[in-house]
Image (cartoon, rainbow, N blue to C red):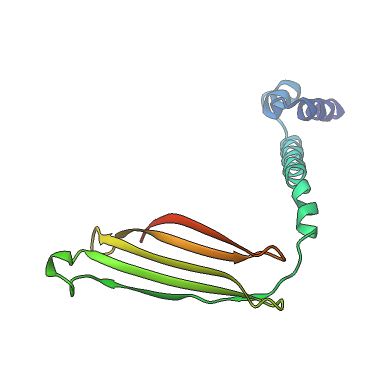
Length: 153
């Protein structure tokens, strides 16, 4: 049986197939213990790989600074059929999102997103709009972002 474990270790180290080595060394019907051990080693190899892949990110998580805030959202949408009956499948959208920080700055970001949509079915609409985002930078004034947004609801 120790020959089986040596073969499993060498196969795991070089990325070989465990089932082939088990069948060759233990005969056509490997014991349940040998198969169970092989599966445990394979699982352990995968867990170590996942750990090593994500371990660089752990250091980055440790550097996160705590900053509490309050994000509000005022949203509205409706149909345009009141403007003109021919526009009954068209919709309007507006959301405003002031975002506050617990720092003395108060308001740190504002998002304003107007848009128009078209009803595709009774339960589905496609939307497109403009987004204006103003963000206060620490000691560096403000930055402004202008972009197009789209969504399917």
